Length: 109
Image (cartoon, rainbow, N blue to C red; front, side, top):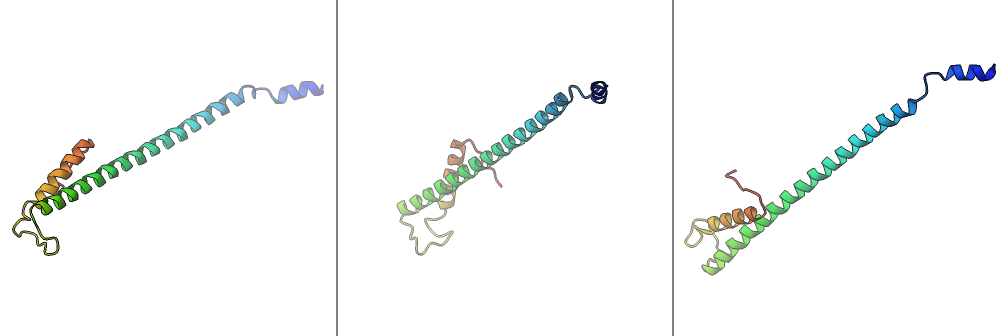
């Protein structure tokens, strides 16, 4: 009699672990996808920052080289004076070129 009562109280609970396990697996898959997506987001941001830093350094280096080769005095540098009118253009072109070599496009903004 006791055995018969026990079997009646658990009727309908068979296979419950399958439903629970499938819900847990879906949740874990979602958390894994979010972690992967967040990692890719940070990786893309780091790559963009590295490309921007590289372009800025290339532009500054090109400007310094242009000023040195054209005998522009660093101590008395005034924008718009003789010898400095092309410095900004040289720096901008070099920065655009370096960004393009890193597969990034610099626009007018």
